[in-house]
Amino acid sequence: MPDDIRALTAQLAQDPTSLVFLRLGEALRQRGQLDAALKVALQGLSRYPHLPDAHDLYARILADKRDYAAAFDEWDTVLRLAPNHVGAHKGIGFLYYRAGDREQALHHLRLAAEADPGDEGLRAAVERVAGGREIWEEGAPAQKGEHEAGPPPGRAPAQKGEHLQGPPPGRAPEAPFPGLEGALERLLLVDRDGLRLGGALRSPEGRDVSDVAAAALDALAREAARAARLLGLGEWSQLTVECAGVHLAVQRPTPETSLLAATAAELPAGQLALYADRAARAARSWLERIR
Amino acid sequence: MPNYQPHLDALTRIRDIRGAMVVATGDGLVVAEKLMAGVESQPLAAMAASLAGRAADLTERSGYGLPRFLQLQCADGTLLVATGGPELVLVALAGRDAPLGLARLELLRLAERLA
Image 1 (cartoon, rainbow over the protein chains, first blue to last red):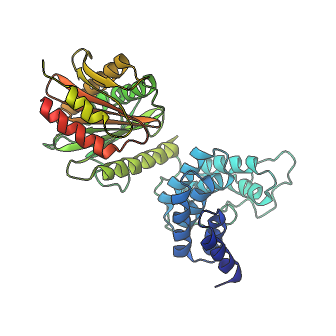
Image 2 (image 1 turned 90 degrees about the vertical axis):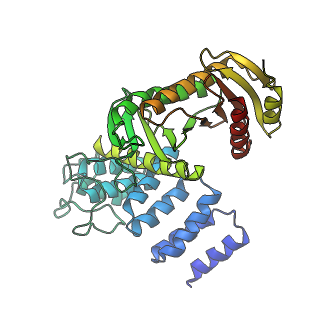
Image 3 (image 1 turned 30 degrees about the vertical axis):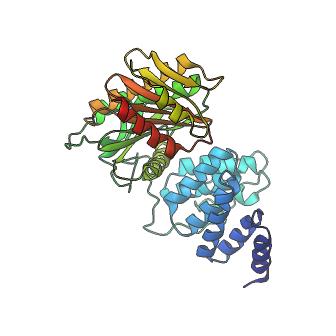
C-alpha cells in the first residue's frame, strides 16, 4: 500500500468523521483502486449526504467505472447543492461531450472555466470543444492541432461505440426513463399544463390511462405545494398515495414538471420512494439533455 | 354522534404528532380535533380534504379506485391522511421527528374503525 494511502487510511480510522475521506477516495481512484475508492466515498456520503465534494468524488468514481448515467445523476446532485461547482460542471461537460452534445458540453465547460479562470487546461478544453471558435478575452489563440475536438483534461477519451444514454447531437432522446423498469406502464412525466412529456401509465386492467392521469397529476402536485406552503411545512418532496392494489408517488423533478411513479401495493413503502427518486433523476437528466 | 376522542388521543400520543382531527371530505369541516398549541384547525382541515379530493380524482380516473392513505412529505413535517369511509378522513400533522411508519399504521387502524 503506498505511503500516502496508508497515512490517509490511518487518519480516517482515527477520526471517522474527518473529511479526509475525500483525499483518500481520490487517491484510491487515481491509482485505479475503484472498488476501494467507491467504499470510501459511500461511507463518506452516508456521513455527509449534503456535501457537494462527496457527491463529486462519487461521480468521478462512477465515471471511471463507466457508469455514466449514475455519474451524471451525482454531478447533477452536486449542482443542486453548489451551482458553481467546478468539478461537477467539468464532469457533466465531459459526459455531454461523450454523448456527442457539443453545445451542452461547451455550456458546462464554460461555466467551469468561469468559476476557475486560472485553470489553463480547462480553457484549452473549452477551445478544443468549441472547435477553435472560442475567443477568450486575453487568452492566446488556439494552436494548430488543438482545433480538433478532444475531451476535457483529466478524462479518458471517448471510445468508439461508447455512448452515454443520451442522443446524437440535435436529436431529442426518445424516452425520459431509459432502462428503468416499468418505464412504459408505471412512470409518467407531465408538464405544468397537465400534458404528458413521457412515460405511460396503465390501469390495473392494462388500459392506457396516461392522458387522463396526466391531466389530474399536475393539479395534484400544485395542491401538494399549496398544502405544504399554507401549513408551514416547508418544501414538499413527495406525496405518497396508497390505493388497494397500487401505491403511487408524486414528485416534482423540476419546478415545471410532475412525476408519477407506481408500484404494486405489496412492495415495501421505502422501495416506492427509491423508485420515484431514481425516476426523478432520470427525468431531470432527460430534460437537461433535450433543452 | 360517535365519540372520536379516543382515536385522536391514540394518535397524538405518538411522538411528535402535533395534531389529529376527523374531517368531513365534502366541505372540509372539522368533526373532531385534538391539536397542539400553534396548529391551526381550519387550514389543516381544508388542505387535508382538498388534497384527498385531488388524489381521489387522479386515482379514480386511472382506474385505481379511491385512495386509502396519503402522506405529504415536507422539509419541516408531514401531513398524513387516511380515509375513514366515504365521507370522513382522519388527519394527522407530524413534526420532523415523528415515527412515520408507526403513525401510518395507527392512522390506518383507526380509519378502519371509522368506516
